Image 1 (cartoon, rainbow, N blue to C red):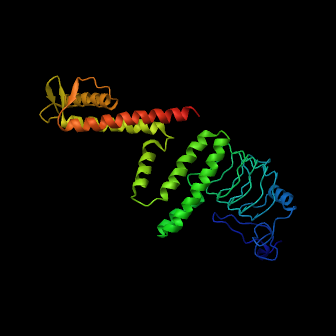
Image 2: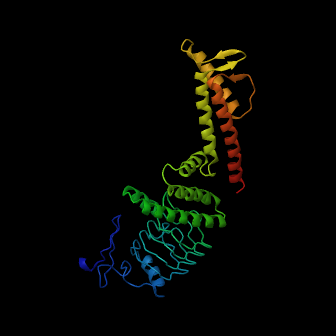
Length: 327
């Protein structure tokens, strides 16, 4: 029977513990960061360790030569779990890593050239400086935010703006590198999502309330940096509806008759005029201008703004839509 003090003391933030035997420290061979694992024997030893059911979460493989290693879990549909593992500068070129989990791990400056990383879980993984050329990344999961984004938000809470900007710069670099690789690989849906995140990270580095940051935010809200054409449709419909309400209360001219919302009219009459205002708003937004209804007083300013915004919005939608479809 093993003694408790001979067991590895590794325990990750999610409560996983290692049952491996210790060496001359409190950790087993795989979880001991002080042990050099750059030797040629490490590759096969890691495969045997993973196949035997050893805890691969949190293991240290800095600078390890794992080129062409097969870390596909052939005995289970669920891949091996390397969450919290440290693979700084590890050589994983040509490796088979299908369905593997690197959640919250560090792949900083790792070599993933020609590796097969399909269906991998890379949520909050440090991907700074990764070499992606030739890497297969179909259906990878990178999550809503990178580890650098989490650290940046933490730094902001601690009023460390300089550190937060540095993390956002790192996040932008990661998104840019991954976006370029996904474009080269022809995975345009992923590249579209990545460019939005890349530009968002660039925006977060700008001073608050600056013109550039506000403009960038408006572009993001309006069309998702050119990657969300349906968002333009939604905003257009909202603008048309708001202008229709304004026309209802400011009034319109119809064949010489002044029409406006009035408490002296019945609900049906007021609702009927709102529908007419909605019709006029659509006509104005699309710059058709049939001429049956005309603005009066303040309605003129509203109509002018809506017509200008509508012509710009329609042109923007065409550009964004064509951009998405031609991919």
